[in-house]
Image 1 (cartoon, rainbow, N blue to C red):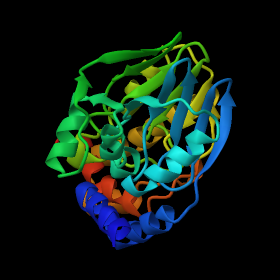
Image 2: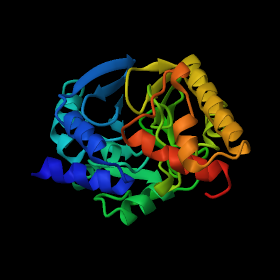
Image 3: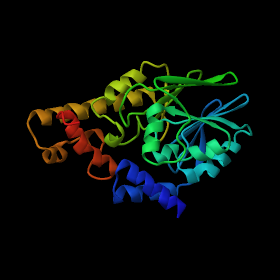
Image 4: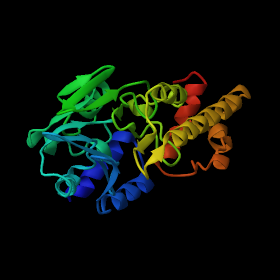
Length: 284
């Protein structure tokens, strides 16, 4: 029952419904596999969000840690590429498919780090493992001669989003600020559709070419730029509808982004569209 209970807690925390709960349950059953992204950098894919594993002299830096029940399998995948201990875990945001393993890593003497809003959101949502080390704008961790930089550059998916840059490799982990599908704006935890494109503009000031999204295959800087433009397209269309005086129900029905490959007809992403109307009309 632990797996289902954990997923229900996540669903309650982000206010999603039965369809999304089913999707999360299916996601939970996916086996984990490791893929090399660059020299000494791997991602672990499968159930939950993408995990980055950076192997350095003297230890390992991990970005995100999926669900709590994925911990053992994450450690198995790490053990396939190194026998060094995990020194740091950095959260990109608080959702349980990205931070659910925090408590297990803390118990294993890893240091867990996140933006101050990540800690606040985890505590408010009664999730386990709030990061004991927090930052407001940026933080850097060093393991041997490797460093990872965490940057909070604005709102989008939540109010605690951070991107994690490995500057020597030119790779950034975006968390759910970048996904290969219609983005979910978690307004219950400070998300913003209107500010999302500017946040990505801020990210693009960093130097990188390879992008690890929160979910899905490794992508490129060009892919991120295209995603940013799609966000802006959606917001422009939303503002146009608001300026025409549509109601919230009409906004939900008429906002069409199918031509850019996004589907808001169902699932938990769709639940953010009424809130997007409120934000764009001044009600948020």
